[in-house]
Length: 142
Image (cartoon, rainbow, N blue to C red; front, side, top):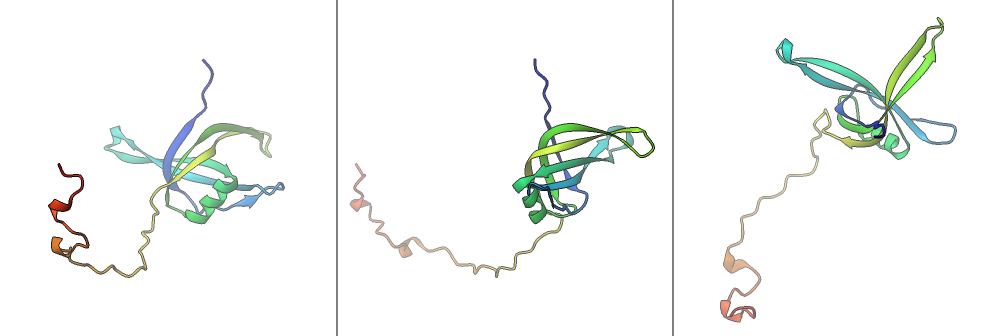
């Protein structure tokens, strides 16, 4: 059996996403999402978890264009562990979600339509319909 590295998480954006561009011109967006778990032993008290994520290209640009802080988002991708040494010489690690799929959920702020309300019309009576309802003229009748 081969190893499997797949992760999917649904939560809310911690901050407004921002895009940066690599030297190659590829869009890169680093962002964090908050996922709430409920602690059954603490009378269903919320326990937030924060996950760092990164996405690239058109996905990064769409995320920045259409999502804001607090908006619901679903991400799927792989986990990647990063290792580095800090200024004090201590070895540090962090796990990040490398996102390859995003689904936008509901926006935190409800967007109200500026379109005018449609006029309500009464349904037409059968005699007002624009075709002949004479059963004798039905070519498919037996």
